[in-house]
Length: 457
Figure 1 (tube, rainbow, N blue to C red):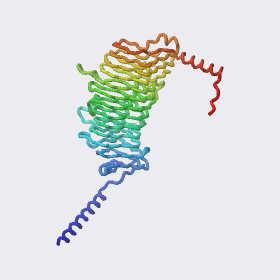
Figure 2: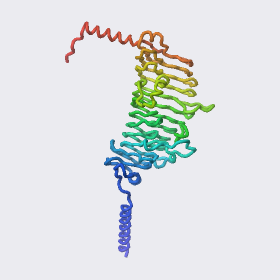
Figure 3: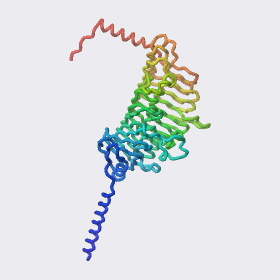
Figure 4: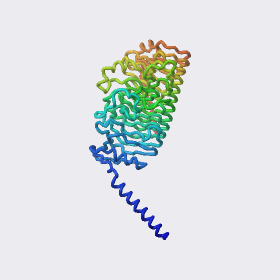
């Protein structure tokens, strides 16, 4: 009898399992089609809901989604570099978000693909949010992740978002690397990587392409429209940015919540406003200090661009090239321990903006300039440093300003403005590019007169 009961239970279990498998097969969503017409949202989301590692194979045309795909903790979404995922016309939604935006997720990876926000047919919502959570209000970003620990977004292309390519809020131990921005630049506020308050212990590296706004923004405070989280930003590494026509490479923005311990390095290209800007988005409240400290900016190779690639920006081009310094700080900021080294500017633009400019109302505790070269190739003088702020300590080490002509070099004031500098350590060496040209000519003539013997190995 016992054997019969065990056999009966085994058969019942077998048939129940078989029934469940058949039922699941009958109700399962079909695999993603990828023909560019069929809505693949449900099929892709089912894979994400049932698998830890999801690989989207190359489609016949492209995958089409009509609402945000949600990624769970411990999940990897992988695509080949040329696989396209496009937001459907009129979807007006994000493309990727994490599943639990309130309590958070961990260990999420997105790798590969071309993520097309289709901004010609999708527009971010207008007007104030009026307290609505960002998840219910389409800001216009392609990907948004909040409260994620150990997030990795890598080796993919962000194409034509309505606003930002990637927005992170309160993410820790994250890596964003190998991102290409393929933007049509149709909207004025198209950031690349937008870090909101609470982001920490993160690396942003190897970004290429033009954005109509900031390639990287660090906004501990923000306007109500964009803000998804608020809090200190700290321990961030930004390394390797390439552009030919962007608003800014890196922007700091705070109205009181601090930003600390940020390393920025290896920036190449030309920027309409600044390479690096310290800013606030509204007047700082009384009694509050917009604090930014322990910042290193290294290995910058940049100049003002000669002609904007965006026709809508040509009218303001002249103002931007004359007003916005390569590195600038707005007023009402409190900065300390700012180090700039390895800054190289070779400028052909006449009447261009200075290399550094600190506005009235800001206070800088310690500012270090080391291994800086500012070369003016235009006939008109080019200011190096306009200081209208209050600097307590300025350290100068191997800072060289070169003017095209000896006359300009003689009349150049390397530091001007109405600001105050408490203590200056070191000096700025001003010379003419003629000196280098004359020495080059002398060496060439010397070599002609006594040619070097051929070295034989």
